[in-house]
Image (cartoon, rainbow, N blue to C red; front, side, top):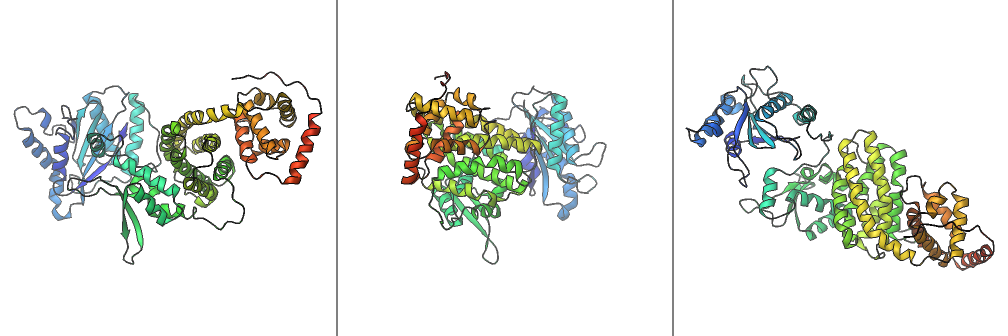
Length: 558
């Protein structure tokens, strides 16, 4: 059950609200609007007054609701209307008018609008015009002329909604911590529907701004990327001329008077305010190159592979910074991945967005390497056109997201945990679509049986507890091919395999051979050893090949 509080102001706020609730709706979606409850139990009902003009009854109802407000005259508060739609889930049973009336009374009591037994509370009505929801409208002056005590009413209403779900056997939503992005309004929803758009302007803007933050190396580049994405930016300047904030609007998205519809960054998501954006951009700015650069895909995969360790051992602020950087990586992956996986990757990014924020302040500097490597990938996504780079990154990202789910679970971040769970589902589908052809191509180049036996022998010596899992894994042929290719490039396969095995335990790997394949590819594609090392490695291979090894067990072939 989803309640959402909206405040209204202005001399006609109550009249406008009542007119909307008893009208046809923006897309004729209002069916049989009528009162199910009110502050006194006998308020005039425009939907149940067949012998009077509905507009006159609406006006009468608005006047009665407004009476305490009008009594204050110039001392009335700025916001005079409290409007709260309360919506059930599609799979919930249809509630009766009496049940909705009880729910409305519980909501206004929890919010401080009309506490139980308070005869001088605010005036309010509950209107039903669909099977699955009601609208509660109240005026924000009590009948004794005082203001209602509604501190933190949104949290209180959400808590009551969770209890209502239990009491009525409704779908139980996850409790939040106030860091979720604001949902689009019904007005925005019907506008998108009317224009034939799949998503509202708010949702599209949120995704584009997040991608620009992930891709930019500084504030100027951030603004240039937004311009290229079709986003207008309006800067908020202070008296000194300093930029204090920024609002965003989609090109072509206008209101009734043909003006751009701007959204403040903080209303798109709590971490998209200008100060928050600047904190992250500061950790992406390039630094002087002191070493020979490696593949950004390798850097991103290595940094992502370290996230579970950060989540398990680092302080909460550093862990939160890692999750924010991982979210940025997932935001950009759909733009650099093979076409067949882009839709699933975008769904994963949208889902994981909720898991990137909590009440814990993020230490973005802790994820500097991941942010910079993702930025480098965005600048030049080529290099792994066969999808190997994306598959390599997704392999470690799946483990990182699983750890994120656990990290949120032990901190009772229910919404974030659910978001990570949903992201894993989409990532697994995308990973299968990208990795399977790459692994199949590798497997087609698997080395000779003698070479495979040599690799198997070392596996049994190095990790006896995992060896048989690796050797019976469908990706074993691809792993053997990756080792052979690294060996051909001058690496010592035994040393390389030892390094790959030492990177992380295979205990939580769904496919240990697949995990090792990407580690070997990442290690093997680094700079090959010099001529002397290559010669020494060749001699080692020649000697090792003369040593008899046990017969390799039969492996599953796919």
